Length: 355
View 1 (cartoon, rainbow, N blue to C red):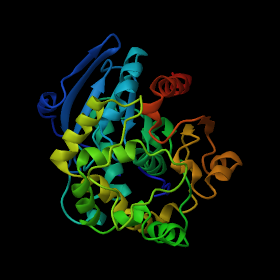
View 2: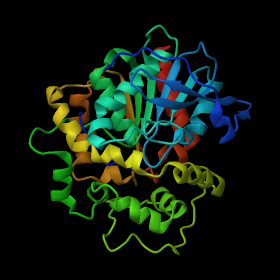
View 3: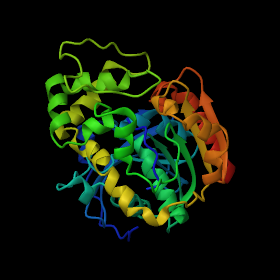
C-alpha cells in the first residue's frame, strides 16, 4: 500500500519464455469473458517475470501493474472484462513478487524505479507488437512505477489509467523517506519498513494471513501507522469485506508464504535511491494521455495537500494530457477489487478513445 507519488531504459531483447509452471499454483481460469493463462518470461534485465494473460494475442495490449501487498491476481476481474472487450490483458507479478524473480542484494541495487521500469520495457518488447506502445493500467506501487515508465519512456505508453496514486513532481529539497519521517514520525508505515528485517519479523509474528487482512481492510482516511510495540496480536480477528473472499486471501497468503514480503518491501527501501537517480527529471511533465481514478476513503487521498493538488490544477499542470479525474464515493484504497465492474468500465471507456 503506497501513499507515495514521486517523479522518479533499457534494452529489451528477450529470451524465450519458459513453460507455464504457475498453472500448478493457480489453474487457468475460464469464464464467458475469456481464459487467464500463465507463463514465465525471461527478460534482458536478468529477471524472470511470471505473467498472467487473457484475450487474443493480436489485440491491443493492456499492461496491468499491481501494488503492495498484491499480485497479478488483483487484476482478475479487469482481465476478463478487457478480454471480453477485445483487448489483450497482461498482468505480471512485479519484480520481487509471487512467481517472479526477487533479485538478492541491497534494495537500492535492485529495486529502484530504473530497475523496475527496465523490466516493463523489456516485457512490452516481449509481446510481439513490433515496439508498438501499450495501454497501462496501474494501482498503488504499480502506479508509482507506471508514472516513472511514462516519464522515462513515453514512447512505449499509448495511454494510462492510474488508480489511487497520483503523479507528483520530484521535490529537489528533501529525500522522500526523510520528508515522510518529518511529517508523520518513525511509526509511519513507510518509515517502519526501512530497516531490513524488522518489519519482516513483525509480519512473521502476526502471520501472513492476518497481515494481509490488516492491509486489505484498512479504510481509515488517513496515515497508516505500525507501532514499534506491535501491530496488534496474532489472535486478532479481522473480518473481510464483501469484495474479497476467504479464497482470495488464501491465494495471496499462499504466495506470500512462499516468497515472504521482502521483495515488495524493497520498493519502499529504494525510495531515497530512486530520488537520487531521478534528479535529471526534476520538473519534467508526463506527456501521455491519462485518466486518474481514486476512492474518497483512500488513505492516499488524505495525504496533506493532495486533494488540492489533484482538484485545483496541480496534477493537470504536470500531466497536461490528463483527460479525466474520477473520485469514487465511499471507496477505499483497493479500488480495483472493491469496485471491479465500475473500475473496468472506467478503464475500457477511456482506452476505447484511442482505438
